[in-house]
Image 1 (cartoon, rainbow, N blue to C red):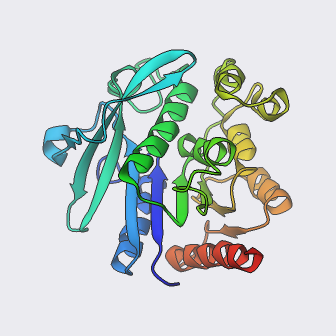
Image 2 (spheres, rainbow, N blue to C red):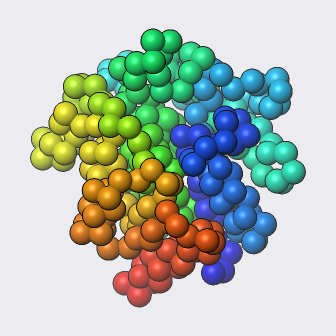
Image 3 (cartoon, rainbow, N blue to C red):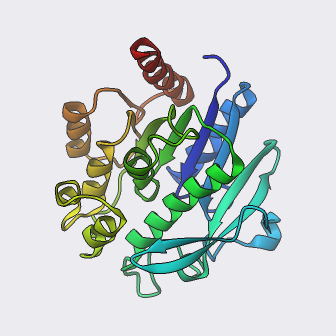
Length: 273
């Protein structure tokens, strides 16, 4: 594949968070693509448990200062950046005191799923979009890892399809196994506030993580089944509903398989042009 501009957006990335089946490939994949000559940008949330001093995060003033309205509330967007050790690659962090200052990722001190995780996900994805626009960097491929990043294709397809920055971008979603945690009952209300119709909001009614994945797949160009804990029901759903897909759950060389998926969706776009 010729050199491409690839945007990676993940809910967890090692070494800023402990290594797991999302954070590990979220580092290894962009690192490999960067080493292969592609132009890579990487984004994740700046959770409060990330040690800014140890990882040498610093705010990027020229990119910060935007306000994003979530459910009729103005929330300031703060952008920070750090260099990945021994990778010649930077990671951009989406930050906001209301959503990311807490010293946890998805669960509170009572081990309950945060009631505002859906709002945090929407802020994160919209923050990535606004930051990339400020950078003036047009990605050929946008690869989202995890349910929290899965709202990005929805917002791009619905509200930024005619933006020159994203007009030709193709989106890939890596779907991972997850506990069946429920989104808040207000998720449809948040999406409706942003401009989705009642029909478009319907798949998000009473949604858990799996339903969020499935609803957001409708806006993706490709899907990668990932991780060891992915249930057969999700695999069956992707098999029946997604055209461009790969199964990485037992892949020996996942980066090669991902490259094939990228090529597949790019070749289709070129053949339609």
